[in-house]
Amino acid sequence: MSEPTQIEPDTAGQPLLWGRFSGIVFVVALAGLVLDQVSKLWLLYGFELGTNGPVVLFPVLEFVLVWNRGVSYGLFQQDGDTGRWLLAGLTVAITIGLWVWSARCQTKLVAFALALVIGGAIGNGIDRIAYGAVVDFVHFHVGTFSWYVFNLADVWIVAGVAALLYDSFRIGPNSAAK
Image 1 (cartoon, rainbow, N blue to C red):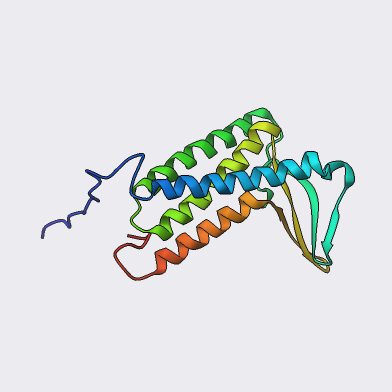
Image 2: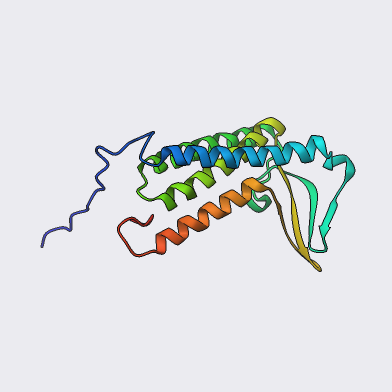
């Protein structure tokens, strides 16, 4: 009885840093990054959210300043510089990996999704380097239930991951799962 052979993906000839949709990825990631950073800068220095306090927009939505020294949902809080720089370095490494993936992707949906995640990751990475923490400010709550506080970069990341999940469940040769 022979051993089953493992099929290795053929990556020869695939682009490493610039591919078919890289222009789209660059523009979408840059637009997401700019919107994220402009919103944070305005709330921090234009409106001075830290000084002026929470702003109720609707009974279930407010702007409130939260410094997130961890990752999603405030997990892995890092109070020291070592943790801060490890998270910043991890962000750089993940962003490079996502860019390489985007250079090799075969569909506009995957390219757009990766662009959103890249733009969001860079936006939160800039915060971590500049302030030592990520600037979060959007707070949804209903009664005593409180959703976590987030920012536009988080929205881009969640939307990008949702699009990648959608693509992975689609039937076809170009799905992200292939």
